[in-house]
Length: 167
Image 1 (cartoon, rainbow, N blue to C red):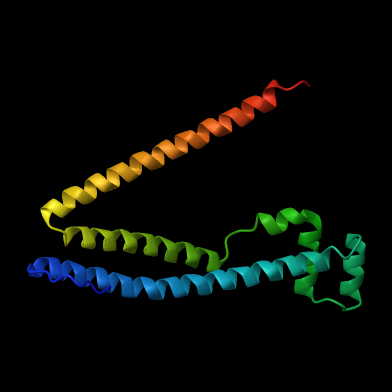
Image 2 (spheres, one colour; image 1 turned 90 degrees about the vertical axis):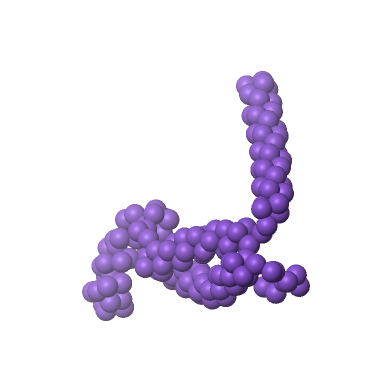
């Protein structure tokens, strides 16, 4: 992040360098996050394919026959039985995978690093600029809160209009 303005304060310059370092690390973490998301998507697709394969059987007896005739492996047999018994819930309510846990960790690190970057950039500002930035942030927060309140009121009207109709 290059800034055209020259800073006379070496302390401010140091803060900006810290912010640039955060940007560099964030870029790499975003790539890792995208890679993990792709892996999670592939794992979900594989679970869905297994579910569809298990649902081709009409009963547990058919799954047992397929295993007995060695059309499926023992691991597939147990997985198919579990999927057949639990149904779609087995796909939707699975325990988190290693990839999902890793993505969660990376996202937490990204969130914390972005907060650190904002803090470094804020610290590089002069006291007058910090006051202006705080006022701008407060105004934005108030506008956002008003927008959310407006949306809630609209949602309330929608709910009320559904309740007012004849049964």
